[in-house]
Every structure is written in structure tokens, then in C-alpha cells.
Image 1 (cartoon, helix red, strand yellow):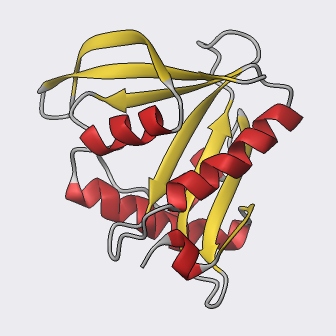
Image 2 (cartoon, rainbow, N blue to C red; image 1 turned 60 degrees about the vertical axis):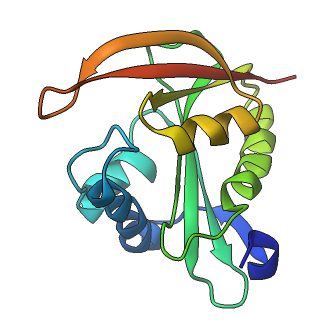
Length: 169
């Protein structure tokens, strides 16, 4: 099944999304190796990061049109370490069953939202060992602008972080 088969709807996240969206994120954390998050988030902590946290600019949800089941989400947030007019992006899609095209559909709407917010660039920071994330952001048109070397994981393993940007306009 692809995203077009699922007939997606992209909409703003709501408080009632905290439990199903945190379940998507926590499943990814449990698998390991693809996100900077290494400890599962409670629904309250999830809300702090993705629904109403300081610096949050937008969070969009992809859901199956027929069932209303969330298939993934993407957020934009203001990071004080980024230049003015830039936002940080985070993308998470369900792993089982994996539905190709969900991330692409989310980014199409996130670009529109970013332009409406008058952003000039979107930054993604991806673990160097996250091949899928690097491929996804590359496919969306992000280009590497910086590498943070040997950032230790919780177990001390050093992993580079690849900083990619998407220039708007």
C-alpha cells in the first residue's frame, strides 16, 4: 500500500493526537538507530515537544482518510541556535505497516506552512547512521551545510549528525 492508496489527509495536530503520535514515535525509538530520541516519551512529554512546546511553529499529521488513523507527523520549531528565519524540522512515520509516500505528502504541506510563516530555510539534523532519514531529506531537496562530529549516544557511541537545509523561496 502506498500513500496514494491510503488517500491521505494532512491536517494540523491537535491535543487528542498526543497518544497515537507518541506511539508512532516511541515505536521508532524502540527500534533504535534513526532518531536522536533514545528514551520513549510520555504523552505529556510528547505534547511538550510537538503539540504546544516553546518554539513550536507547526505540527502536521498525515492520517488515513477512511479510518482517521495517524500514519505520521512532521513538526517545525524555532531553534535559538539557528539563524533568524530558520526552523528545525522533525519527521516521523509509522514503521509497521510502512506506507510509502507519507513523508513526501507531509513535506509538501509543511513547505506551504513554512512559506506562510515567512521562513527562509528549514534545517534537519539527521544521525549519520540513519540512512533512511538521510535519503528522505535528500529526496525532499535538503542539502548538507554542516556536520556535527562524534556526538555521543546514551551508551557513549559517537555518531555524527548531518545538518541539512532546505532553502525556501
